[in-house]
Image (cartoon, rainbow, N blue to C red; front, top):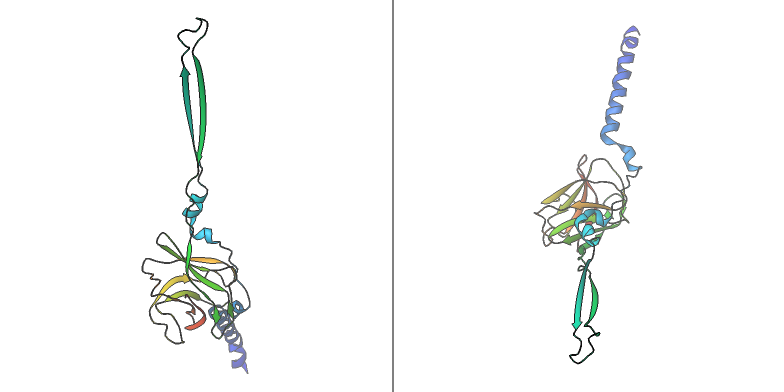
Length: 206
């Protein structure tokens, strides 16, 4: 009995440590708490937004016409001068906005998911956007991958581009695509849980 009492509190303390470490590792609370993001498409292409706000150019032209008095006119008559001012306002050409080159709907893989994933292109730069309707079940250690494929049937995702940890499981958000991104090759988005090596959600980019 004395031996049991001696080791009782160390065992309880060790058990508490295991529980805390397990909680931090598995984070079951993430399944029930949303991380909301509210980025707009203009946040992904700030240069285009700045061009849209550029000022117009105004050009003013002044034309002066002098008419001499007739030779036979009285000396009191003098030459007349007409001045015409023309103002021309030139608006800059409307900058082309980002163009959607691929889009698809999210679906869950053993988890709930809905929303839209879209790839936008502007002057050779590509951005993957999760639209405002995005709502993916949250989880620990979720990452955004773009697969070098047009479908995914589970298991090993094969070749992919990693875009970083998901910014949030709800709301609009943008992910800059690197130079190695090829819209003809990388046509599938996968939300992957690294901690447990399982997929959470996916979307084609047709």
